Length: 435
Picture 1: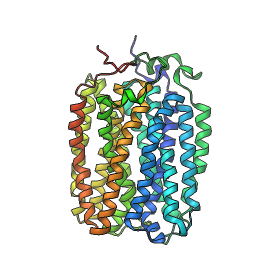
Picture 2: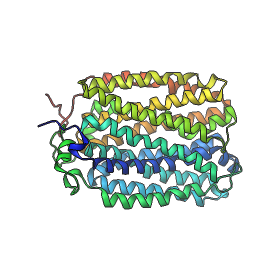
Picture 3: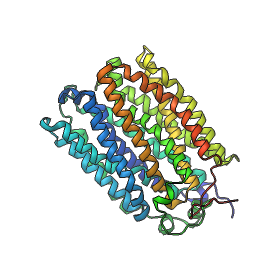
Picture 4: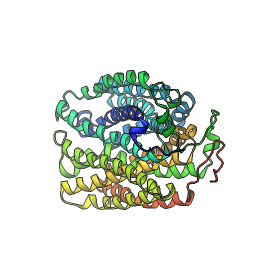
């Protein structure tokens, strides 16, 4: 088959689908980030302790982990079109539910609302990664994943500016940001249902573009692969280890505003600019990380070497996080966190592509679900520990949080290589494909 490598020859309809994934993930992270931005304000308004706030975060993550137990399987079984729609409808309804919570039952109310939000949002990444696997060849998946993963930062950037513009320092109008995503989600569901089909069924996709999408994919049967076959695979656990670093990303989202407030006095009206710097850098990391490993593959590097060298560079870039709690300058702390966020996003999108590089497409969402569930479990432990330490030892808890965050990536990469030294692809029956 002649190699097709230009948009002029192949068309670019796949990027319309990617744009919808970008939009969904932006909404997802805007919804997810609102509470982190409002945390200092709501903590004062509702008189929450750090343990109370940690309990609310843990509620979200327990639901997220439970959801990952079955949402990936639902998406693999019923398809991305239905699965993604179900996910965004659930999280949008519970996101708006936050706005009706009253002070008399604020703790229980937020725990319930965050639980439902986590259940719905658990479907986003399995659906998004599966969509990329369906619509892009392996050589382009890291870059495509980098594009949509950059939207996590877009959502996180929008949250502090919109919240800061609407909500007062005392907490007036705090409900309104939780309602905004309802309108956006309704628009997305309309566009998604109107636009999405699998490539082989899509009437607006050219034959050349379909051929390009399938240029390096193996033929697959329609028989589903059960979790009992996926869980024992070393490759499943190699990916799961990479998701333990999700605790670091969620630390930025849910505890970042609190850290900057506790350490440097940053409040809801001036958190926007620090978050803009952090998440713009994170976006750059997403795009550069995805482009780099893809470019190395196109230069003739093996997928194994390209992905792991990129992951190694990311881990080294993140190391300076360990000194954040001891720096005296707010902006130096922000820049170091921004560097860590950039490294994490580049790490994350290359971690996701490990799944589609190795597993058949029909197992992608399930493996993502299993791995992300492990990452959630690690994040829950981190939240409980940090909330307890901050209530008993004040800000010294941040010291250990940043030390662990900065050093964990290198350690995890070592174990990933031990579990999956060659990244040999698996066929429909999870047998190694020998070439």
